[in-house]
Image (cartoon, rainbow, N blue to C red; front, side, top):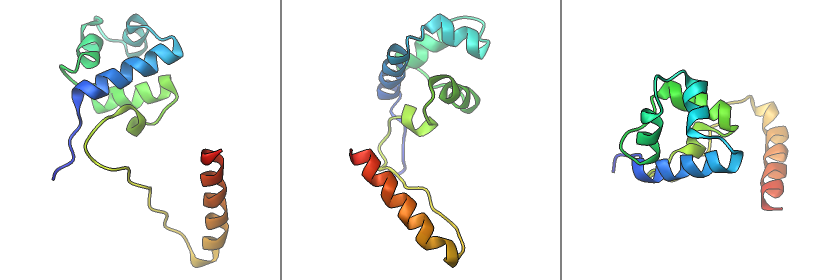
Length: 104
């Protein structure tokens, strides 16, 4: 199955993130330099999606990753870590601390 983004669910998630941060549709329009608020409403209603550039900018505005804004049908993919063998133990210890902190 090819991973797909669910526009409707993504729009709902964007609205929740905006509400959580007290950001209005007009704020998003101004921040992105859009001509009108219509594009933002289309995103929130699941009619269309922001461009990659706009998603990238929104991630900065909202303080979340692009993946955190998107809803789709794939499972979470942990980032691959490419490192030297000598760094593996240090990275493993750090990773374990992150996992414990998330669980708390």
